[in-house]
Length: 362
Image (cartoon, rainbow, N blue to C red; front, side, top):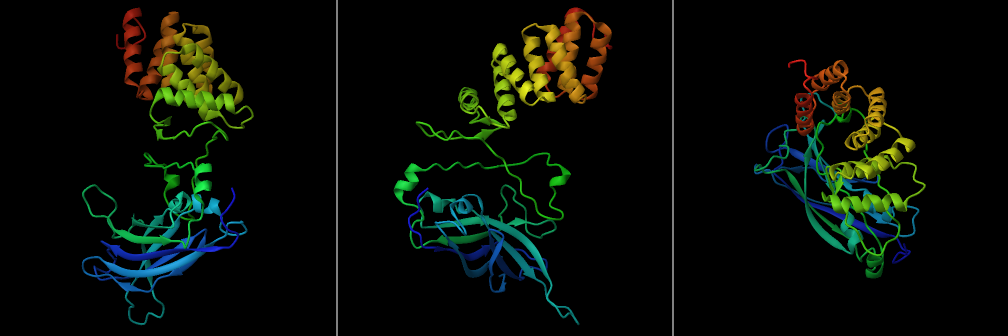
């Protein structure tokens, strides 16, 4: 992308005030802010006393230089690297204490993307996220959240109007994470987690991409078209596993079982997993191809015998094939592993009642 100028230009960040701050040592604590960007400390503010109302007037300004021609901080850095603002409390000195003790209260993140959208200045109120053990209240609906007022300024726009209209900017936001594993708990060195997507490099129109439970825009018709276009577009990708899984799942949900079977077969050939074999098994079962379904489900079970859905479909296959002992055994594991799909469980019970076996409680 062609830049406006070859001269480096400063990007100025000013933290004016902090609101609803709370310290370890009461409401009138002494705090300062450290600003960081691109793993470099931009500076520390003066030590400011927080008022009884929780307000601190920092008026702290720092900056870094943007270099349009690379060799330093470039457009890519502004696109995916935020400014980190860490608020730290300075604890009162105790008797015979030589060095000052400090405790981190929380951290805020300033997104610089507006600078790539043509803005030369913007103001934002960013929440201060507490560290473990901090007296700052975590975000809860209806409760005032600690925040920082921040201003970002450049002397002139970093991109021209022509560059903005001729460029593409893809933004992905992680709104929430549930059932986070213990390995993600921030103990020890900080870690970064990244999501990568393959995006067509050319097209006649722009496509907005949103995620809802892994489905683009929460709309199956649009999602299916995007996934199909991706598969036809990308022929040499090293990792298409996710695309095949999502497209296959959409085909199953829309009862396009032949297409689902074909998609999962491709996935099994490229990167076989429990989920690819399970998808193939489900498609074959719905097509009443019981032998092929059992073969695929057996492969899935060999890769992960703790998947309740695999056991449920194996139970269905055995029920349809008239194999009572195996049907009851598969059903036992389905219940032991607590199948969550209520519709599938209802279908399993209905088939058991139809054939008259498969449930040891009969």
